[in-house]
Length: 236
Image (cartoon, rainbow, N blue to C red; front, side, top):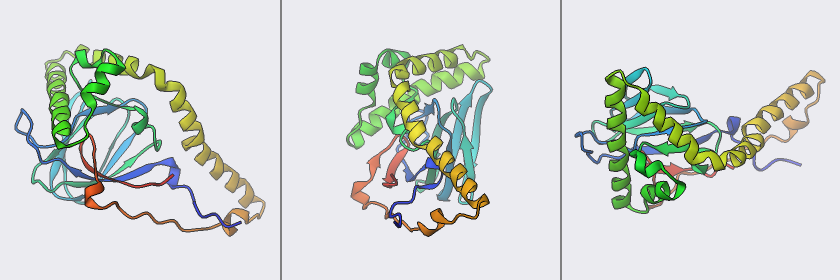
């Protein structure tokens, strides 16, 4: 039987991102700073100009973004997309499709909003532009405090943010492991099986070759993501 739904490469996810052009309290325009606890993320810049601000215990780094740049960062890297010309567009490639949407991403809210899933959920709710702006401003507020403490040589505040983020998501870890096993791990195992077959001259999986295409949603269907308006693709 010919497969009508080949798996997207490596159990990754891809989305189109138009970074917010709303100015924050520090005068910079962009999205909500956040961290991923288990996933690596990549930016492929396709339009406009901006910066990627990243924060780790080593300090703050500001990476210029312009068409052709590919930048990626692993779990624990607090990141903030900054839109310098109002036209920054990025293709986002995310490891472990579905995991970020299942809670792997945690925004840099001040500590009192990270005390429980309830307080965090209320602070992160954003169904319209007003909600997305409020959420972004709250995350920027926490981010600026974290960045200032690290640049002052005191990474303890960032470490405490990590601890709070892990505790906040601790009830989700079993579900994440199931997603990993059915997603990225299953994709790797499929490839291992295909290699086993190729060594034996078997072509079964080649006879199941197929094409799948997903169009970007209409502009009014773009979601209010953490960093900007998102074109989300149904790749599952």
